[in-house]
Image (cartoon, rainbow, N blue to C red):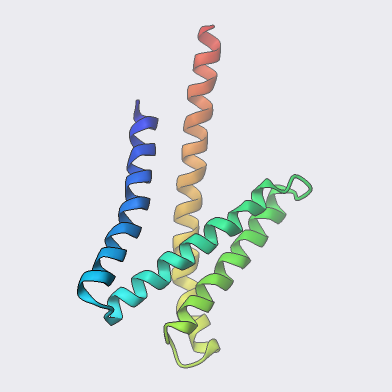
Length: 129
């Protein structure tokens, strides 16, 4: 049941984020904050595509994680650059890197814990059969 609730929350957030952003853009016009939200939503979509790297069976998990992290950092830097964060690539990198690392590790930990939870539930269900 908990898994179903999480899935529905995730789908609701994904659809709601895009739909509400589109509504704000259409009804209120584009201001600086909305442009940033739209840019980061687009970056999130690109990061989702980058995550397909985990489907490449020829890559070891550490290599896939490293490549994923670098590509996600690249998307984040590109988005920050296009939005005018920092005064050049060097200052942008120094400003963005600590935030990126904290967020990447937090999301990675969440995904790992969720995977362990799913594995435990699956094991318990299999043991009952």
